Length: 112
Image 1 (tube, rainbow, N blue to C red):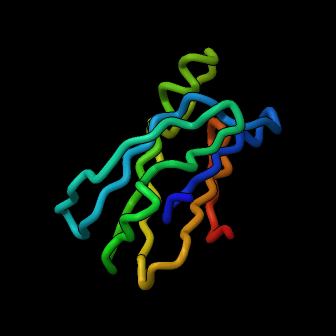
Image 2: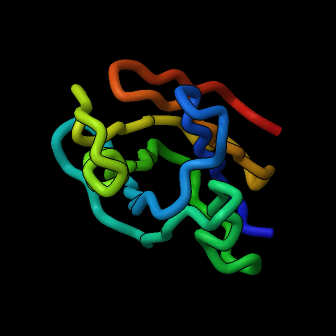
């Protein structure tokens, strides 16, 4: 399993959000370097964002979810064209970054 995984659920429909593009960046402040990209599968998951044998260095990271494309595809107006979740990697353990999404709100937490 990738060191960083994600799961996106559309809380309006109560279903996984399929087809959301996500980019993982390393950096901080105004300087970010893209590391990799992924897309949510039919279960709303991105489980292979990183190779399993390449742990991340300690530091600040963010995942950017392209939410506008998802809502446009479903013909739903949204207030948030993208969602960025910034988090800190402090060890080689697994980091699961869930996103609960609806057109006018979102929330996240440290998953397992």
